[in-house]
Length: 106
Image (tube, rainbow, N blue to C red):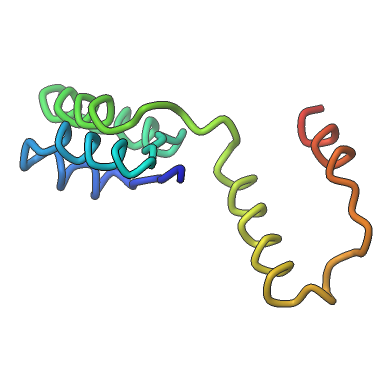
């Protein structure tokens, strides 16, 4: 499972110097923490260079990669998935997954 942790969660783990332990436990369970553009932008906005450096180190310790799709797209995917699960009658029948992927990657 791919997981996203906001910067407050990353800081919480990092402040306790448990980043390596948390990442090892998640890896063992088959999970990956991925960073997002929001993580990076929030870290960039930290004025204190020493604090920014610590927070970047926390992110690099926990995250094993970067989400390849922008946050709004992931939110839309989650929303559509919930619609399909909870209200399948609201979604268009016969959606073409290949066409959707082609349009997404355009």
